[in-house]
Amino acid sequence: MQRTHTSNPRTLFLDTHDVARLLGAMGLPEAVTQLVGRLRADYLRWPQFDKAARIASYAEPGTIELMPISDGQQYTFKCVNGHPGNGAYGLPTVMATGALLDCDTGMIRMMSELTLTTALRTAATSALAAQALARPDSRSMAVIGNGAQSDFQVIAFYTLLGIREFRLFDIDRGASLRLQRNLAASGLADLDVRVCDSVEQAVKGADIVTTVTAYQGVAQVLSADLLEPGMHINAVGGDCPGKTELDPAILPKTTVFVEFPPQTRNEGEIQHQAADFPITELWQVLAGQRPGRADDAQITLFDSVGFALEDYSALQFLYAQATQHGVGRWVDVTPHQEDPRDLFGWLQAQGRAETVSA
Ligand SMILES: NC(=O)c1ccc[n+]([C@@H]2O[C@H](COP(=O)([O-])OP(=O)(O)OC[C@H]3O[C@@H](n4cnc5c(N)ncnc54)[C@H](O)[C@@H]3O)[C@@H](O)[C@H]2O)c1
Image 1 (cartoon, rainbow, N blue to C red):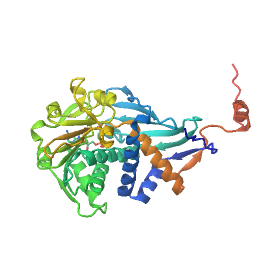
Image 2: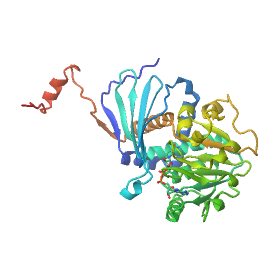
Image 3: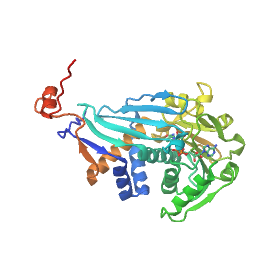
Image 4: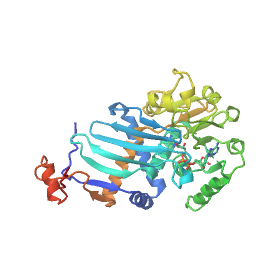
């Protein structure tokens, strides 16, 4: 095995401004393209990863999840929440942070913001799946739910699938207008963005339907009667037990593709289906081991919940970009001294040793 030990004992720290600078310098189309390349490469070596469903702490207002993964050389984790009511506190629905560690020493190589990065990696994963599953002649996409994730989804599908026509719908019209404004200012050429009055209006005739709503419960954002032959559904918003967004009657009418089955059966749209409901793993399609779309009439469904492998790829992407461009700060997350066992000596040398008297 290739050793990953580094003589640099410091940790690279990226805050959200650092990641914004990196993404700003690259431009989102380039960033999402590079990230899809990494995702594809990592999905193709799926068997090399030590995988587990994420560890979740469920509460009434939302969920906090820990997402670890390792390929034996590097270990990553993300801690992410999903609180659809957070707007009332001026906070995003989804916030995340995470780290990249060397397996041969346990050294923490990088700690980073992952809120922007989650939006980017989720959009990149959606695009990767759609490249394999959507009809190649797809040109239009309905976007149901126009919150924080949605701009990134649009940019990924514009860049990687050539989608030019976007139909937006949100129960909050202001959210759709915000998304429309942001896209108009994005500099992407030939964009045709329409704000729709209903899900039906957005979905009718769309080649791809992305659902990316936030609601802490069982919603039916998309009903089965709106399905059309040949559609690809990119279902992003339903991602924990008791939180789904598709009419369950949609599932048997589609061919369902998932990330990591043990996690998706618990968290995805298929949680309402039988334990043996047929699914295909995305990595097997990418590796050519299982068929993706069979014909132009088939309805494909990517039941996205977000898997730790995608954050592994994203953290590797950030580390490579940040070290190449000198972005971020090197911080001492762990003490380092001549005698690594003399932790107390190091503390004294910092002048911070304290005596506790009873
Ligand atoms: N699958 C993944 O990998 C992944 C990753 C990130 C986020 N998510 C999920 O995606 C969802 C969206 O995240 P976000 O950060 O954009 O949230 P957000 O709160 O910023 O936006 C959600 C939007 O959905 C709209 N909405 C709610 N119910 C709706 C309905 N019935 N019809 C139409 N619009 C509706 C809201 O008005 C809001 O504008 C969340 O549920 C989140 O948990 C999934």
